[in-house]
Length: 303
Image (cartoon, rainbow, N blue to C red):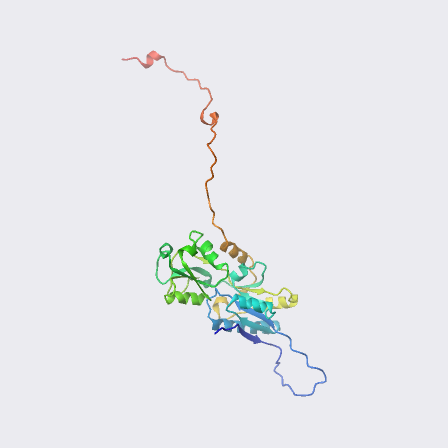
């Protein structure tokens, strides 16, 4: 059974707490303002669907209450569902993961989540081993978009291992489901946050992912609305520790991540240049030196 995006709608200003009397109106009722859509999609954050649903509700409620703008929050399991609703104009803003932004360099970042320990990633397994000894084993990757495999190969392994030749690649919808596949023995190693219970890192090297960001998806939104929502999220706090606090936009983090994931290894090859030309002055010293030598008879005199 397919489950669509989870949605939470919070509309403020519709109920002021006063008693509403049912009286004839002399003017036509004004239609309610359409809510602004805020999507949530960050598969690298280790949260389950219920936590994402709660986060979308908390965020929509806070943005509505603080900015005075009706907000509709929607949590997504797949990037294509978010893009579909963006095309249908159901969402105009979103909280998205770093790899989603890195793959779309023109995305306008309005705010960035505060750093959290889950952002340090490496290759994890049930027991200590070596990456070189895992040839043919199953590497479980979360569904991180087109930058995900490159981030493992170029960023984490420094282009020393071709992961598609060294491992059997499997993909999971989220970070938590990828971790669970290794715990259950369905995969051997996973690309996941280092502080993961019951799993150990198989290498000393790790990389730090930038935090998710609050972004503008629809550039046609009024400037006043963008400003109010950008200010509102800065005061947002959540019980969801992974993305519970927010700060100003750290726009430089996301292009750097994209460059790291797409880095190409250097390849060196020797080119024939022919026999080297040796000049006389390079090997012979033409300087003249005067030496005073003893007489020949003194050199060979026998006592």
